[in-house]
Length: 114
Image 1 (cartoon, rainbow, N blue to C red):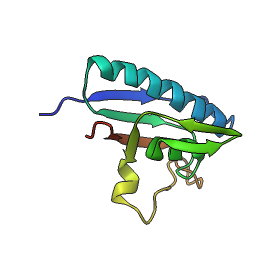
Image 2: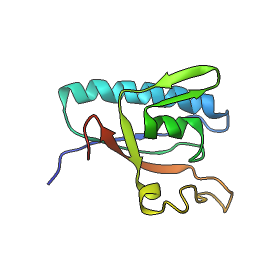
Image 3: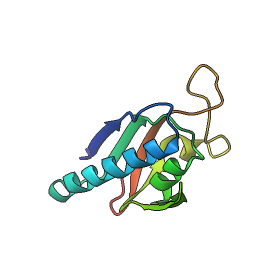
């Protein structure tokens, strides 16, 4: 068996990606503190209310993004479970066939890997 930190989030909807960037920054900061006590990899799941190609999702995957007049950084990176399995279609619709993906499962890549 594996020990993991499982976390979920659901940022405010429909207010642009900056709100999601701020939520990512907050959630990852909180998870970093949890990981100091419990040094296990993180699985982050959520209805993130934004598409795969948006800056907030790039921040989760790359640990850094320049967006909305700011350079955003987080101390860890994640793999998108769906995109890893379906690289030809990383942004499928998850709501009423609208052309946007909202739901995600991310596995931590660095500094601890799942």
